[in-house]
Length: 284
Picture 1 (spheres, rainbow, N blue to C red):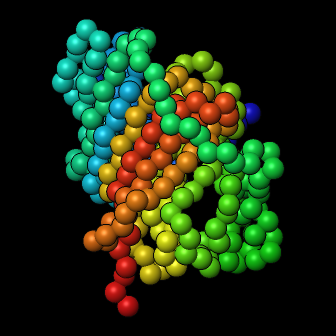
Picture 2 (cartoon, rainbow, N blue to C red):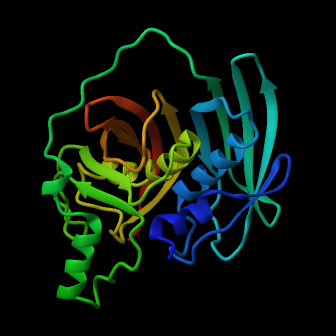
């Protein structure tokens, strides 16, 4: 029987229908296509248009319109540059002929070079922490009308210091979460990059809300990812625990800016993210 992670990968690894044309589908929930899904599908499409020895090192994307999960997403890949060591791809995701997402992805052959990195924070290990799945299952047992029980569990997320999303207390805009895919992804780095792109959109918006008495569940907030950047620094495994460290230096004009870093359990920095999100207060 296929695992929940296998079922997720069926959606993230898009169907190729021509050299530079791909089709992606979505699960029925949530009611609006998750931004991380579109980013992961676009990266997967772009990755399959370059040679096997080329791996993504950066991705810069804009979320243009909400995606409808009941409709397929068409990914058009533009091979704008093929160099000796770098390749660049533009990808536009469309529904009903209208763009909902676009991105530029750069690929590089793996090579040696100068090396340095920031230091990972010292935090609790994931084994001592409650996962999101366990938390929502426990909350649904307490109040099934308020908290729907989770039905799938492809991604394990274990926050270091969980915030109550229904009664959010203002705090410093810093969030640390252990994440991993719950299964064996094999040894294809491109598959691990696809899953990391999916996971990278989980909590950047919520980090920008931390200094304020709101969360993504608050009716007063209209929230959405506006743009997203992802850099891959070193090879990694997305089916092993990664510490996702996020902070938000600024919020203004209805937008929140957040940054993130992915570290292995050994403290190796493998990827970085940045995102602006819409965090608009609704008119009462």
